[in-house]
Length: 172
Image 1 (cartoon, rainbow, N blue to C red):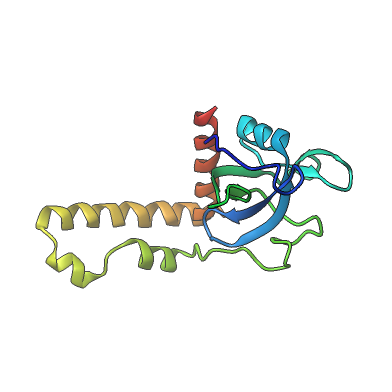
Image 2: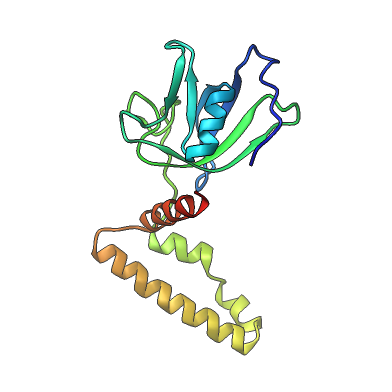
């Protein structure tokens, strides 16, 4: 994931746009120097350079609301980063989901999820019988698992969060 970033262009700092990997919502903007960029790569959690305190800070180090890195990409001029994350908790220091006081909720309701994830009946009829059978089997399992999650007070987003932690552990 190492990139050739131009830290000199803006006096040693580059803007880092933080985007939710699941919802696509822009959560915040922070600044990184070379050291905070390297630390982010090393630990898999977004680390910024605080301009007011003149030191590194890993988002969540006091609140527990970490930003787990999924991917990083530099722009065409190599002086801005887009960091896709799986956030834990609210992102803004004021307690809101984003620094623009927007909600960052994806629709993980069982009906919405099934509508988006499973082909409609017309598509199923056109599919080969083996594929149709496999898809129906998957849909049945998915429905059972979602009901089980709901009965325990859990949602699909909890599964996504669990998987993101598992993925981050594998990368280290």
